[in-house]
Length: 356
Ligand SMILES: Cc1cc2nc3c(=O)[nH]c(=O)nc-3n(C[C@H](O)[C@H](O)[C@H](O)COP(=O)(O)O)c2cc1C
Image 1 (cartoon, rainbow, N blue to C red):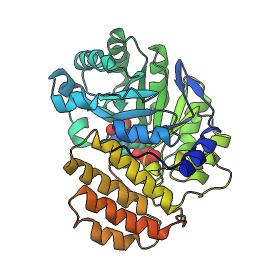
Image 2: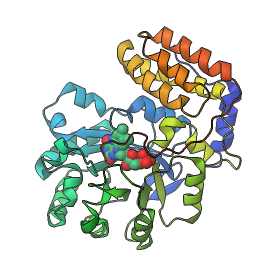
Image 3: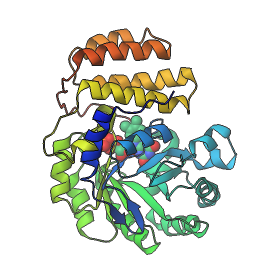
Image 4: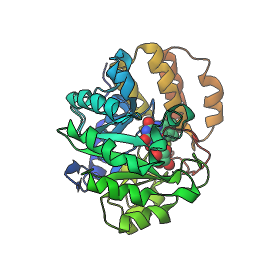
């Protein structure tokens, strides 16, 4: 059964959503400058749709292998699906050679995304050892042909997501943005770390701002915007046209809304429980029960971070194998906290591996 938010929560959400200002990056329209970042095994249709309901202005899918698409691997093709209710979604592809990427992009665009995005930030060895992900930043001379080939089959815009460079001594994001501009790429999202940094240290916002202020292409800044204060601060003073939020909304699904709120931290444990119910029902139409349980459990643990006694929830949750039991446990935990709000805790060690 599809769980709908209560009227009380709906009206709170809608009030804050009214503060969203739509933007255009190149020719691509978004409902707000705050977008959900691509995250492998997370930014699938149900989660993207939930974040849209909770104020994200658009999103990019998890990274999808161009080879998997070209081999017509069913699991890979399923990842391409964009729900008709979803707005402003890009499909992100990864791969290393222009021919395979071109073929895959041609197939991907038939799934009705708004744009196709190329993953040029993935630091994972399995991907970079073949020349994909952030390895694409290593030899910019190849990029003009790479972009032009992919663009040649597309009737929708092409975008890229990069890091600042391969390592500190070879930070070439600015050069790549210029090449992207000359090839008609619509915008560039930049995660402010190098490949070598992986997820260590902090995102270098000075570097991101420097590139954005050159005004070559619209820049989406990304990295470490995990709490409303950091997001608001950035929105006030940045040369970036938009921002991508990744790990932040995993712990605070209301982050897109809280960033629009003058008084932070107004969402309660009751509201978090509603999000769990909603996500579970969206997952029901996407995953079988086993996968729903595995995925939902992750989200429940992330959501509980910062609430009282989350350690207790953590120690019980892995014993539960069925959806009913998982929802019961969450209900007793979150509803007991009731109107309590969570402490905003930035913690740079949260999820220090990923594909971009
Ligand atoms: C679990 C996880 C999976 C990720 N998967 C992708 C991906 O598929 N494609 C991509 O471009 N970036 C991916 N990333 C990187 C994020 O999009 C983002 O650039 C990074 O997490 C920094 O932003 P944040 O501090 O807001 O999380 C992933 C990150 C995480 C934590």
